[in-house]
Image (tube, rainbow, N blue to C red; front, side, top):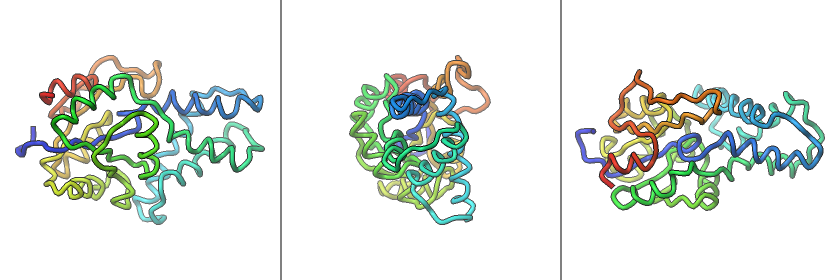
Length: 238
């Protein structure tokens, strides 16, 4: 654990709290199958997600001003629709599909694990998702937060230091009193470099069963290594 007592838990969302791949595949099928459009919707979700980091890198590098993730998702959706030869959608249909990211389901262990963690810690998302996206996800998935933090507050995207430091400052805490919770080592390594404590939660099927890794990774060690939010709560004494 960090030298300071941890008072706040800061959560990555996509892949850590919610299952984006299954949710996007389901929403794409729901939105488009009624038009007689049939595709491999998991492959569609994967290709849409593959444009996520490159689109944010344009902001991180200064090549474009900060833009909310909803806008980046819409731009990336249009490119993915073109790649899959899907055309003729109305603006309303594109808007509905863009906001599929607002209707993703939490992993099964999340709600009860969060309930336990909230008894002891301040809790907030520190996501690349914009504030309205996080609010809609919370209401849809029954997620209870003490604040909505992340990229829109910092006006930059993870893993830039400003994103983590702005979250700690929003809670009036030093970085060492905050713990980043994520299923992605690069997120945690960036948070650690800013002085935050770190907790890894294993999500082996985030990218589908074919890509699943059954065991915890050993190339990095974080203060907490857990296989679920329930185990995270156990290890943090909740």
